[in-house]
Image (cartoon, rainbow, N blue to C red; front, side):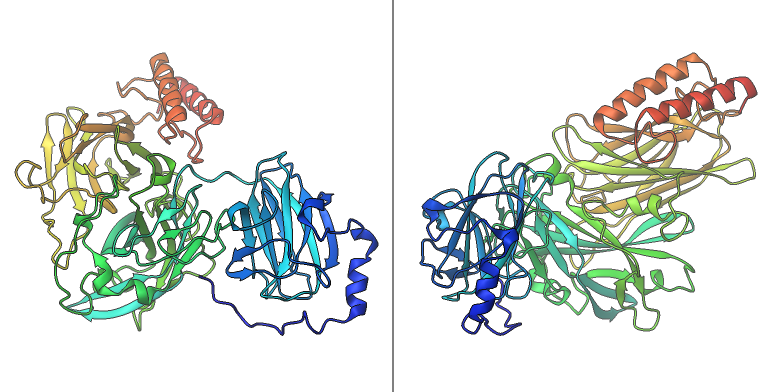
Length: 595
C-alpha cells in the first residue's frame, strides 16, 4: 500500500471563500458539477473547476485510504480507450475516481487516485469508447475545498491478455563483496503487471526473477555471471507502468500496477531459489535447495578478472533480469519477461551503476545489445542479426549471428543463443559446412552455475564432420538430466573460422529434454563453400541465379509471418518490402559483376 506523504499543509479548512468562489465561477468551466450522482452533467475534454465546500456525501471510494468526504459528480463519454483526469492544480487534498454506476462505490470503481502530484490527484483509466462513466471528485478523509480538473481522452495500446509480468527498470545495485576472486551483486526491481488481470504474487513463490551480467568486448557478447532466482513476498500497487493501476496489492500485483523492491531486499539470500527448481514455461516453482555458505552464495556471481579494465579495455557491460510467473498465458505475456540496461563497473570499488544516458530496454533480453552496441556504446552493428525461434508448444530462444572477414582468406563465424523460457532447453547447435571447407579455431563459452545448483558446468563438446560443425551437451538427458544444457535465462556462444565466405543457410538447435520435434532451425550465415561469398546465394548452392530469388521470397514471407529477422536483408531490424528491393539490387549486381 502506498504511504501517505505529508508534502504540503492540509488546505481544505483554510482556503479563502474568495478563491472558492472564483474557481466555481470561472467562465471556461461553466458546466457546474452536481452534488448528486444521479444528476451528474455530461462533460467532454476540457478544464473544469468548482468546490466541494457545502457538498454532501453521495458515494465512497477505497483508494489508498477510504474516502467518505463530501463529493461532486460529472458524467463523461470518452471517444478513446483511456480517460485522463488531472486535478494537480487543485487547492486541497483531492481524491478522484471513475465509476460505472450510482451510487459510486468500491464495487463499481473503474479507477481511483488519491495522490499523484503532491496531495492532489491524477489518474488514467482504461475505458470502453462510447460508454458513459461517472466521475467522483472528493477529498481525503473529510477534507473539502476548491478543485480544478482537466479531462482528456487518450488512445493507448491495450494490455496483454491475462497477467503479464515485466521487469520495468533496475532501481539500484548491491555490491556484496568478494570470495576467492568472485564478486557478488544483486539488482533492484521495478516490476509492472502489463496485463488485463491481476498477477499472482505468492509469498515464497511466483513470480521469480533471475539476474545476469554480460560483457561486450572485441565484437563478442558473453554472459559472465548469473544469480539464483529472487522469489516473491508481497506486492505494492504503485503507478508508473504502461496502464493505469487498479490499486490491488498484497497477494497480487494489480493490473497496471508497479511493485518496487530495492537491491538490498532482493539480495536477501534466504529468498533466492535455485533455477533448477523452476519450470520457466509452466511457471511451476519447487522447493529451495542448498545452504548459504558465505556472502556471495546464491547472488549474482562474476569473476573479478571478467570486470577488470586492464583485461578487457573498452568493454561494455549489461545487466539483465529474467522473470518467471506461473499464471501468465502462453504468448506475448511469456515472451517479454527479460529486460536489460547498460551498466558501468567501478575499477576502485567494483560497484555497478547505470551507464550515463542509458535507459532500461524493457521486454528485450541482453542479446539484443550485441547488435545495438556492437560497434561501441549506442553504435549498432548492422552485421549482427537477431531473431526469435520458438519451440512448437513450448518456449522461446533468441539467436544472433555475425560473420567477420579476417582478411587472410578466412572468415570468423560467431553465433549466440539465449534461452528465454524453454524448459526442454538446448542440447546442441549444428552449423552446416560444405565439403572442402577447412574449419579452425572452434570456440565455446557458457556461464557457470554455483552455490550448490545441481547442474553440471562441463563445457559442451565440439565436433567437425558429416558436413557440419556441431557442439553438444557432454551427456544426453537420458544419460544425465543435470548435464550442461542451454537452460532458461542463459546465453551460450559458439564460433569458428572457415576458409569459405558466408552464404545464407540454416542452423539447427537440438533440444535437450524429450520433445516433438526434437530440434528447431533458424536462418543464419554459414560457410558457403570454396569460392562462394555471394550475399544473394540464398539457397547455398554456390551459384547466383533466379532460384535464389525464389528462395529469398519464401524466406521473406516466412520471416514476415513469424516475426523473425531471417529476411532482414538490409539490416534495419525490420522485415518489409525494402528488404526485397535491397536483395534484388544486390542480386543484380552479383549476377552481372560477380561476388
